[in-house]
Length: 275
Image (cartoon, rainbow, N blue to C red):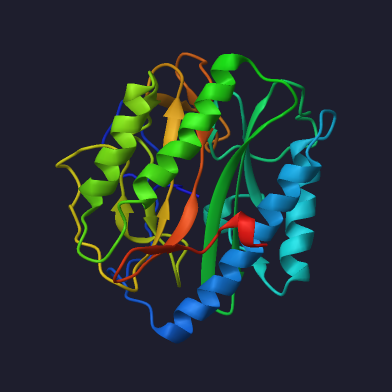
């Protein structure tokens, strides 16, 4: 979840909400082990949702399932009540970019590009991840957008290791996205994650001098989450004060993992292939 995590000014502005700030935290071995468990819960829920989604379901159905499963594994939903957000997941469809509110009237249909973002709070620490699901048969452009978004996430993750810099991640992501003809949303970024759902640093997906180019250290935990649009990079926020949509109604896709920085590389804590 990347709510209010952008430090950039853009043509549209999210409401300013004060975040908890503790600086950039280096997690201990004990804390990392707890985060592994929180992240495993998130990975499990998203894997199960990806397998159960079908046309005719509503986003409220997915939200209810996610909350029940998170609680059944001894955690609480990170998102529910966060700055007033009403759901346990963000469910954003097609031109909805981020922060879509689950709704019993929002029916999922064949051809939809569905983003599901969720988090779990377990023994004092959060895990956070997002997937994009092609519902049934989607258009070739939508299929490419989803593929490139996931590839971009891993292009960024591959740059992670102690001694690397955030611009290494950002450049790898931006280059892959733009070389495939898509745009990077700049109004929302990734973030540190741990005791708080959002911590320093902001993990940007494009080259910029507007945010600190932090040097990575072993023990940092980052939520890396590129967001791609098929058209313009700009978004606007709907009257619900949460849902961001593309300004040109083009499709949007997003993937996110919680990642641990190690001395020699990285560990993907929300790896769905391991649950």
